[in-house]
Length: 115
Image (cartoon, rainbow, N blue to C red; front, side, top):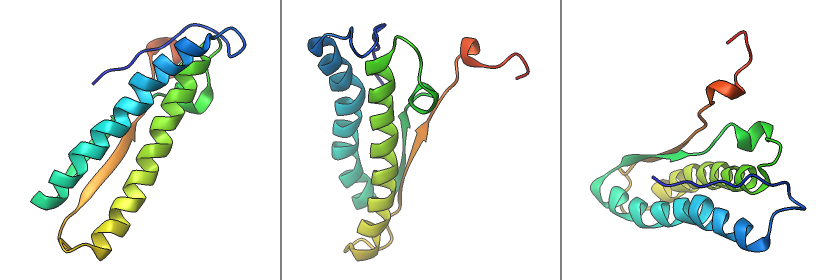
């Protein structure tokens, strides 16, 4: 598992930083799914938990690239879980079952005082 962030707003984020954050967080997740799912289907199933972040849902100041890249992880994961089900219905391996779920941990600093 790998993930990186940046501490800039969208206007202050250099394109190189934006692309690097997406390369690790979004592309890395995509490539993992791309290469892990086919063998799981062949073996009859499995589970993938992709590390997203609550920042993708609520946003964080000065973390534009990080929030956007983790949003991409959530979108990819939800899309993958739906297409895996469709693939399962039309696959030669009709007994296969691959689940994909996003995990959105919350840091202690992001929690409200009541939690």
